[in-house]
Length: 327
Image 1 (spheres, rainbow, N blue to C red):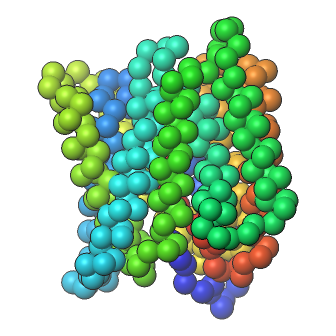
Image 2: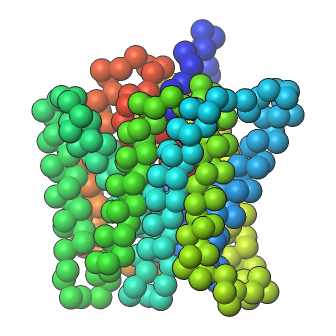
């Protein structure tokens, strides 16, 4: 999404780093939140509830603060926001939620999911190239390095702690959907206000997730009484911390900090996710995870560092980090 020009009033560095820390930690922790939520909740139905509730809260806040016309958009903008929302939330987030659901050995650990999703900036570079853009040579070097890390991460080893291949491919499919949505968001007639656009993206994504959940029969034998307090708490955390607080901090940063600094979340989030998964739910950190993850993060860091200086500080590029990650 596009941001408005940076404020002419200098912003205190402490505020910028506070907001950046919120984005680092909260978005990095959402992968663990998803894993805990789906322990006793239907995966797609829980994601639909999360985004519907978060979208409703954001819509009410905008309506109260800005008046009756706060959410007014034309049909073309509404259709664009809906398409992007389905790609980001139903395709991108929904597939990640599915991959993290299931018994051990089938479900993808939260830290691994975050590392796989970190390939989004690499996929967006490929999309840009396919549509005629010519990124720098160092950008392609970062893409190559990142995908080498992806291969190292999911390469079957036969040992304990190996990444489930089917689940890993599901996450990569979700990252591809997220990349397409991020790519299109800079080329479609989106609502001018990123908060308003997010409301419609969340509603469209929630509706698509609900339809898919019904089609999969997730609610056929589901009873809310079977959901543990731990899963309810995780879902509430995802709604508030991931979809509202971190997103608001991200949009504020786009107005007040250089995009090259804001973009660092793309390779800090996976490190946070891996660390939290190991500390809180004992997810294994094998040599393969460390090597593959480090190579992916290095590739993403190279892409981000070589791309961002080409843009004005207040203007997000048409890349993966221009569209906030609704994790």
